[in-house]
Length: 137
Image (cartoon, rainbow, N blue to C red):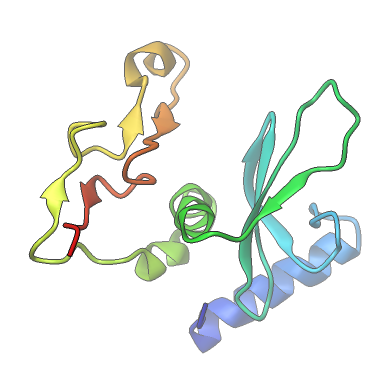
């Protein structure tokens, strides 16, 4: 993904801090954590590589790396909570898109469960957190 010079500089600075032990790096040490919780980490590299690492806490298996479009959107949406400049990279809603019925166009599901702990919920499986879906051709 193409990053603006300002965002590239910020990611590089975070990456260098993480390499010095003041942050978290991806398993392959090429990217810095921009959001994460139990079972997942959202990473971005200084050259714009966006990916998710997901893992089963109890298994001891190495994380799975996901660079799909869906994973990249999740990194942008979740990562923007800690790095607001990522919002500018989230795809804009096309005019022919429709509201996502899976999340009632919010991008989040199970919100009622997470509301009491101050959480947003879980990213919608249908729209990847965008709140809209593109019409099929």
